[in-house]
Length: 176
Image (cartoon, rainbow, N blue to C red):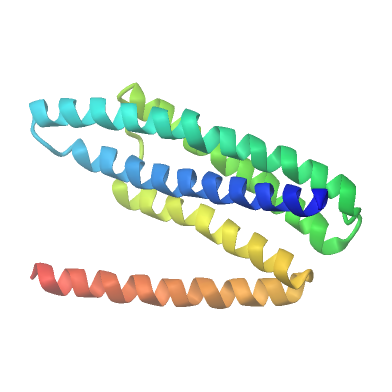
């Protein structure tokens, strides 16, 4: 019963963490695109996006990341799978995800200080890094094997890539 509850709260924390990561990514893009607006509008949007990103990041995203990691450690110790190859790869991917989290935080901080180092296109690509890590981690846990998880991730990313290409082509066609 305790382990089932720990797992449930771990999953809830993961969902909250990723909701924050993915929405923060969108806010980074919107804030970057706001830099193309006239001065008064740009200032107003900058201030609003700084506030929204700060509240999201420190009110939801980071606490959810801490809960995810904390509950994950407790579960790891309880279920004793840390020696299995798929789990070692999962831990590596989680370390990459944590690095992604802190890189996002650095971008948020830079934008708050008025430093916009990335284009909106670069930020759109960056936002997909988290999604790809999420896909691979979830499929790895589901399959509990590296090869099927990798194959499933490649297929999922390919489908998403084709969908993105179609949407982009439709947008370009509509713009002309």
